[in-house]
Image (cartoon, rainbow, N blue to C red; front, side):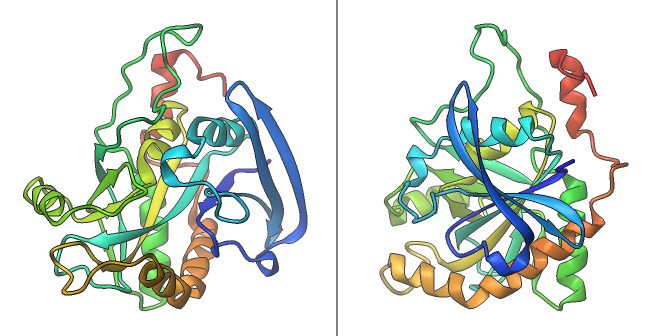
Length: 264
């Protein structure tokens, strides 16, 4: 049984992390998904590179529905995802980690639900706490053990991309209560919740956002900061897995009662 999956950007996956590695292709109604399977300390893990193996898929063109459904069909119950983000909050400095508990969705063209009125019907899925508190708690526990600077709770602002935001947009997002800004967590988190999966996000602060940073933002700056922190990110993910108990106190699976999909 594959209970836990990792969704990561380029560089997060390292073949040395897993044993008995194999790649499978899942075909579902939304598309084809390549999933890497392996074992970590005897437990089976699934991994999906969000942007493709060669980082060739921009954030607004990722097939989020195919990815999440593929993991569901593999039996996955827990997802730990990573994201490089800019900071809107001076207390969140480059190199810090944020475990988001809320999001603001400013995407525009993405397919963001499994319930489109066809055979799936129409379901208004609760999003009061979209990011699983139990997954966040597991990640936080490891971060504190490793003396990482981690902030458990915060608002992830998701924009369409692939461009960076203007200074005026950043100012607006700050006024709305945003803490970090990225391009990938939505609809990934909401799709996982629709299917009753526990989803946690490790946001790696790579820079201060436009208008906050004293310099012009560059993609190379983001990549460089990710490379600096990638070993720590891998440790947080893999060590957190051992704290993901089957008997959680969260209500992530309760959505399945509402949709009639709770068949165990």
